[in-house]
Length: 272
Image 1: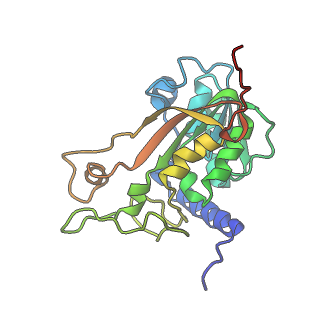
Image 2: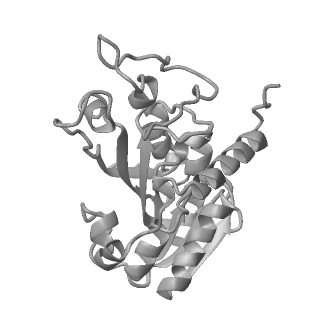
């Protein structure tokens, strides 16, 4: 029997999937090590988008459980709140915080449901790859815009639409586009791939949704990079080989303008 794809069913499915990934100690669920916490911002912000000092900044690590993002930002001096859908992922954050004597708050909720936070509560929102797990990215952006103060920074990373369209394994003709760009519903499931999380429901977001959606939610984009994972020496079919042809991720720095809905009212001045 097919599971109904109402919003709650999607959340429940992905929560269970991430809890299972934690139980298997999947790579994306492994906590930060000593070196990562010592290096702090250099580990998570190699381009210096956040400056060189997070002390006293209110940081929301969104959909970022697993004991890595939150502890690293807390080690760098941030006042950190970690939000995640998976209780097992949040438990890893609590364990790391206890072991490292870090002050870190955890909240179990979906990334598109941040009503427990005040308007403008955070100075920085950090959002690792996660928007693919919800069909409506605009709802996520609206929530981030509400809880981020005017002038605050939103750093998000996403799976590129081309990567989600492209076959995981190569054919004789290379890596082929298999999924339509204008598609609805979850992507077909895959197993055993670093590019996709086994058991999760994932959705493709077009560039107009990823970039245009940020602008419409009241953000100005200040920078955009495609982290390079290409490895010329890696074997055909590997993650590094595929990344030579298809960029798997995009990382975006955006700033909250303080203008609702991405529009601004200007008075018209006419010289006499």
